[in-house]
Image (tube, rainbow, N blue to C red):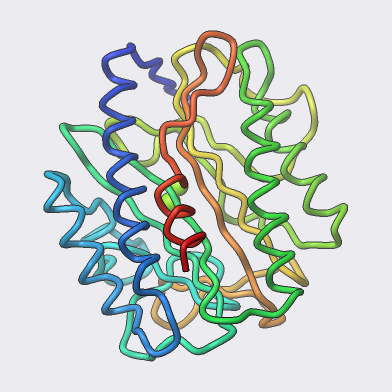
Length: 264
Ligand code: MG
Ligand code: MG
């Protein structure tokens, strides 16, 4: 394991990379509605990322099982959990869409994801989104120097399982820095007191991927999209954070996104 502790200067660059994601997702929030396609969202996302002087890290991302990732964002609709590829199918009223976005800015990688409602969604879907986002913040509360990765994992897992939801095992959070995926891994399941000791300067992405039904998932034929085995809904929220001065400093932000959503 090779964990790079970041200096304050590096943390600020990571924050800038992540704030560009917040801006990008806020622009997408303005146009997410029934009829819009995930391809349209991708085109806008790439424009906003590049206009802010960053590059989309997902575009061209290698895949051991098939072609490189072709787009600037992952758009995972309904039963898709992660890594959905933008396409020309219009979003429908009642869909949910997780938009995961990665940027590279001045050599540092931002990584953050938000799950959006399309039009009017069911109460069941609303609760899934609410609980998944709550789980993210419960994980972040544990991201304190002196605790361990397992404390984050346990907090996310218990909050979601207490609501009867599935916690996906195959995909996990991770360290962030010069690379989008660094050590350590940050699973959404685990035991308190287990795993890597958290230290000031560690930067990690915490990203619960939570399902309404089974936790089991499979890879679709496109070799990217991961979907729930029982075709029930999945939600995904992600923040990049840094541990310092005794607590978690959240580097990404949902503020601009939620300002847009509140005014709709
Ligand atoms: Mg991500
Ligand atoms: Mg991530």
